[in-house]
Image (cartoon, rainbow, N blue to C red; front, side):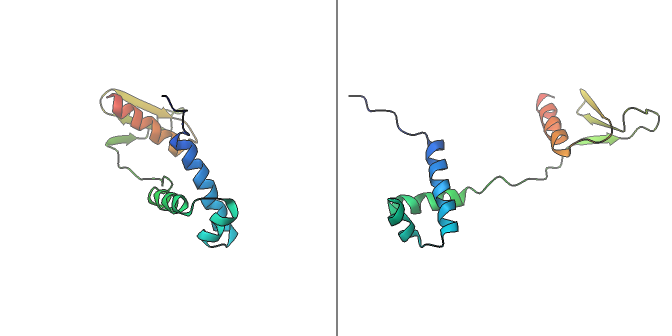
Length: 111
């Protein structure tokens, strides 16, 4: 006999994350929050611990093996970044550091 599909782990994670955030704002004890919302306390405690162990992704500074060359003679490019031996990226004016970081990681993976 085939059982019906269950919720995905992402759906369950989002469900419990939402309840945990509401509980934090409620000022109630965990047990009282569970009683008022019809939640199994052991499930609430399980997910509280599980989600606490996997915190939100924090930005990480990663040193990258590339050289940065500025070019005074080239008016259009204010910065050139050489990644490995295959790629040179020319950056003009303002740029977003996070986009550059992703680009460099991608190019390093390809070289």
